[in-house]
Amino acid sequence: MVSKISGGVKISVESFYQPEFSNPLQSEFMFAYRITIENNNGFAIKLLSRHWHIFDSNGILKEVEGDGVVGVQPELPPGETYQYMSGCNLRSEIGRMHGTYLMENIKTGRTFNVIIPAFELEAPLKLN
Image 1 (spheres, one colour):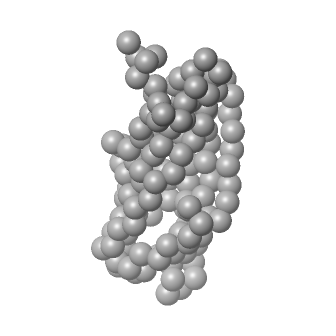
Image 2 (cartoon, helix red, strand yellow):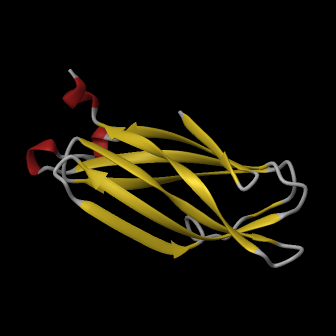
């Protein structure tokens, strides 16, 4: 698990290879990741959008942007956490993701970026 605090928000990420949804013979590798967002600020926040940079060991870079996460824009009061699972498919056994969330201070309407730390996507079969 990797974690980073920025803008008063702690982001923790854990990734998992999904062999049951992968087909190595067709260069299809599926990964899941669990993200925990912890609001350490003294004010409530809302996650407005996400921006991902997704790399694989074939040298392919994808950027993904969108509103919220998994179809919601969660609001977190001070001290609260929000956790979700999502996934990513790659054309190689090893990759990496990192990005940012655009957050809003609900009281003031001010927006700020929170860093999603880089994390590895690794199929165990490649690590042997």
